[in-house]
Every structure is written in structure tokens, then in C-alpha cells.
Image (spheres, rainbow, N blue to C red):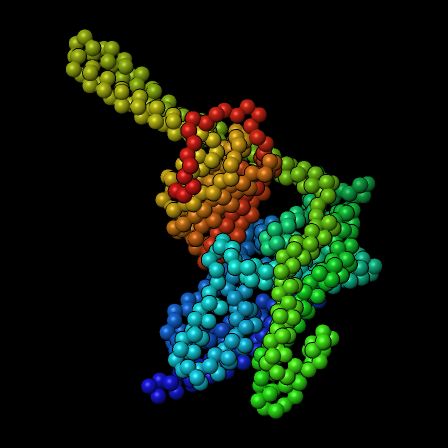
Length: 618
């Protein structure tokens, strides 16, 4: 018993020492975050990644000594960028000549989008407070305190399941506080990036366009955080970039009334005109000036009050008793002198001051979600798209997808013609030949004629099945009979995966749009089975009157990319006819989340569906 007690106390103090040593990692992460606030965005990810070995050591020791199973939930590291056939490196919809920047972006996205990163920061922040307290508690309780340390480690380092929103009030409001800090940091980074743009515009205007494009990465991150974290959608307002100059028949490049030998001159002038005439460039500059002040006014007082309340609670109930027992000046606590508590030296005075400290700690957290939405909405005033930019983007998408849609339509017609020629047409010709044989044999050999008639019945049934399959590939009958909602549920029932279908009350939409969504769901679920090795998937359909939004998520191996396959590119071409947009989130190791948005209108002449199912899970 004594040996077990001594061993538990020793192990608890070792874990407490590791927690105190983790303060060094916390300081490095804090300094990297300060660098992020001034525009140096490259240090925060490596700082957190540098702390992971110490966190892994604490996890391993807690699992061995505290008898708890603490799994590792880190996403797999991103793969190295692959050069495409034309020599460029692709990252989303952007092309780069070198792979360095693509690799940096992938590692940053891998680090920041992994939920385990947030748990690591949470661990670095709270473990130096919790673990030493548990180490001191082990002097009185022994093994129970060590087991409690294991439970604390399991809770702190285990991220939530993908797609599960935090349900606890405190979690939601602390996340909102973090969102406020993120928006403030991005606003300051945008302000820092504004200075190089002005200097380049005055002195070296030739590199002004790439400088502006680089600075747009910060504002795009602000838009992403507002949309995905806070729920305030901010679309990108930028006009489409100009195409690369095309030579004339004589090999020269024309821009206006001037000819050039090389494409770089007119290309540079076109990009300068594109950036300078885009109103979004000036709106970004105005946002870079105003956003830091507004975000600072909304975020910094909240952080200061929360920190004040947290430190006050520590001083009231940790440092004051320690100071009193050691006869130091810690016992003379004067934090609340402006509120009538000149000196807090007794437990009664501390108990009276505790509600005030709790008010300082909790009151800002209560309003933090609302303040975060205010920050995002103010950013949307300047960073959101105007009607002119929306129209220009739609025109560009229509021009880009027109050729693709025409080619896809021609390919589909050739497929239908080939299927008819090789399948149904061949069977009908064979049936005609057999009918001629039946006509010749019906008088002389009735038994053989009956045998041929039975074969004709089977051939006609097969031809009918092939025709139905062909029609189902053109426009599934279930769409016309039951509507999009039940058609999607039917696809989910036919899938080998366990598919959860969530559909808001959905009216009948335009028939081409319904068919597009139906085939997109079929393609995505098929990809989850063939390539993702998934076991579970979810389909979410929502319609807000003009835009149909579909989210398909699976728990497969991830790593999907439009570059490495034709399925996602085919989906992009299909939804392009409806001014649609596809967003892919598929880190290595999973999960995969595909969001499809397309513009459509209700069906002006809806037909009543025959039946309607009510099952939401297939």
C-alpha cells in the first residue's frame, strides 16, 4: 500500500512537472500568434507542431500510469504537391509555378483545420494549472488523484467527432471568444499587408498585381472564418482575372493599337488594369484600415475582462491562501480596491468578492457570440461582393461552362446512341430474324416454333430492361413520380453504406436541376464506396428559395482531389450549367465533405408525387 502511494505521488509530480515545462511551448505559441497578428502567418503552425512531441509524451505517460486509453486523432500529414502535365502546381482553383507555396498552404490548412490542434492549444493553456493542482492533491489522496489526472488528459486531448457541434454552453461561448480573436488577428494582418501594397504602387508598380493577389489571401481567410466558424457568409467579390494573351496569326501579341513580341508586356498591363479597376481592391484597402479598429473595440475588452476575472479568481483562492501561509505580500490583495475592497486578506472578504470576479469572467463570455457576429457583419459590409462583381463572376462561369456543357451533352448523346446501337437495336434485329424463322416453322414444326417464341419473350424482356436502364440514366422515373427528396432516399437505400439523409421540407424544383442533384448524389456516394472505403455517409439538402445547398460527408480515408480523377471534374461540369459551385474538404485520413450549391427555381408546373416516404435514415 505504501509503495503504491509513493509511486502514485511520484508519477503525479512528474506529470505536473511536464505540465509546468509545457509553459515554454505555450509562450512560443503565444509569440507565434502575435506574429500572426502583424502579418507573419508562417510561424503559428510550426509552433504548434513543435509542441506536439511533448504533448505526445504526456499522453503516453498518462496512458501508462493512469490506466486510460488515450487515442491519437491527428490527421495524416499532407502529401507533397504533384506537378501537373502543363508544369504547374494546383491548389484548389489557383496555379503556382513552384511547389513551395502550395506545400506551405497545405501544411497550414492541415494544422489549422485539424480539430486536434484546438485540443492541443486547450491542453497547453489549462494543463499547467490543472496538473500541478492534481499533483498536490496526490499528497492527500494518492492513486485517486493520479486516476483523475488520466481522466482529465482523456477529456482535454480527445477532440469532438467530425460534424458534431459543441452542445455545452461554456464550450460554445469560449469558441466564440476564440473566433473574435481570430477575426481580430486577421484584421491586423490585413492592415500590415496594406503597407507593402502602397509602397509597391508608388515605387515598383510592375509587381503591384501579385502583391495585391498575395494580400487577398488574408482577406479570403477572413471570409472563410466568418462563413464557416461564425455563420456569416461573405462571398469573394473579385472580378475574374484576365486570360493569358493569345498570339495573332503573325505571332505577335496585340493590346489596343500596340504590338508586342512577348506575352509578358500585355499580360502585365492586363493584370494591372484588372487589379486597379476592380472596386474590391479599394474596398479591401478600406477594410484593412477600419477592420482592426472595429474588431479591436469588440474583441480586446472582452479578452481583458475575461483575463481579469480569471486571474482575480486565482488570486482570491490560490495565491492569497498561499501568501497567507507563507507570510508574504500575496496576502495583501488589492485587485478590487476601485470597488470598495481595499484589502482582501480573509476568506470572508474573498467570498464576498468572488461574485464580482465571476461577473468579470462570465459577463463578456455571455455576449461573445453576438459580438463575433457583429465583427463578421461589419467585415461583410466592405469585404462582401457588389452587384457588379456578382454579375461579372456569373458571366465568367457561364462562359467557362458553356463549352464544357456542350461537350458533355454531345458525349451523352453519343453514349445513348452507342447503347441503343449495341444493345436494344441488336436485340430487335435478332428478334425480327427469329420472327421470320417462326413464320417459316409454324406450319411444319410447331414445337420448334414455340421454342423460338419463348426465346423471343425472353429477348423482349431483356430489351425492355435495357430500355428502362437507359431511360433511368437520362432521367430517372423516380424523380418524376416521387420528387427529389424521395429519389435521394431511394439512392441512400440502394447504397451499401449506412447513409443518413436530412432534407428540409422541399418543394418541386426545375426538372433539370433535380436530375443534376440526383446524379451528383449518386456519383458522390459511389466515390465514397469505391475510393474512400467509407462505412458511413450523410446527405443534407436545404433550399432557401433560390439556392439549393447539398452537403455529402463520409468517414472514408480522404485525400480526394479533382486533379487525380474525372468524377469530381464531371460534377463540376454538370453543376456549371446551373451556375453551381463545388467545395471540397478532404484531408488525408478523412473525413471527406463535399458541398454543392446551385441556383434553381421552383417548378412552375409541379406534379403531385404518387407517394412520399418519411424515412430519414437509410
